[in-house]
Image 1 (cartoon, rainbow, N blue to C red):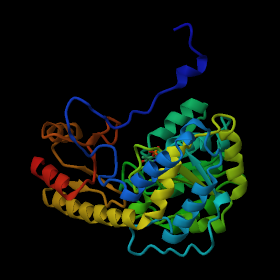
Image 2 (cartoon, rainbow, N blue to C red):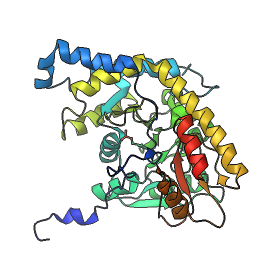
Image 3 (cartoon, helix red, strand yellow):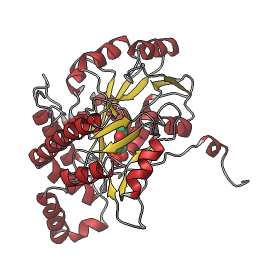
Length: 372
Ligand SMILES: *Cc1c(COP(=O)(O)O)cnc(C)c1O
């Protein structure tokens, strides 16, 4: 159409898991948390609105200073992996609020990260099958991409990724644990990537699922200035409907992201989200307990699927990635949907046999087991 900008042509929007309104499904298709927020989150929002209703008419704190303090506290306490039994809360150093940046969900935060650190003069390196928003942002910012195929066992091909970024002298991004494969890298493997990264280029690690059994890379921030960690409240903190994502990195990098944010929207975190997020951080024990329940349910469901002849990758997340010989991913998806349960199927070549199933409550998983 004649009215549109040229750059719109390279836009290829992200397609989220369906959010149907025609009937009530059990939703296991968007990796949302099945447990509600802690009651203190609800009362914090109620109290704040009752005591200071004028706040809704005033611009919020553009730097969300109090929230960044609370996030730093939470990370120092939990080590950034709060469901892991072997999670060490001892990071070896203290995360300070000047190492945190907050935005309107980690999707927005990722957009700022792409703008701040990746140039359009060389291809950005990321795995072939990973969070499908990365190629979308490459289109948005017109950054060329080099997608590195996964190994035969669906793990990231670290050698090839390192080679590609050295060759391109470019940055890298991946999710750890990865989506939709659910597989996690060890911290030592992330460290190998950071050590091999080209001078002056960052490595972005998206830890959206780290609280469900991954090993956080937070301790590596002490020794690696080129590390940028992106995290979200959406999954482990039951916050997908409120929107809050954040970055943890060294203060100079955080300052650069602030410049980008202040060139786009001064106030990505509104007063209500800020209030709810602060209360969530303070209730982290409750969310850690929920994450442990989800992990136990995931392991139980994985055993069930394997017994029924499904191939299931070893998940470190709140979802499983699975397929079964002789039946397509689309068919499994349709079967679940007809039983009133939504799961996710990707038509992407290479993974079209698989489905991605979010781990819900015990009752929800029992329903799904019946349907399968
Ligand atoms: C869910 C998800 C996000 C986005 O989270 P929001 O904070 O809800 O925008 C980012 N990265 C990965 C890998 C995700 O799965």
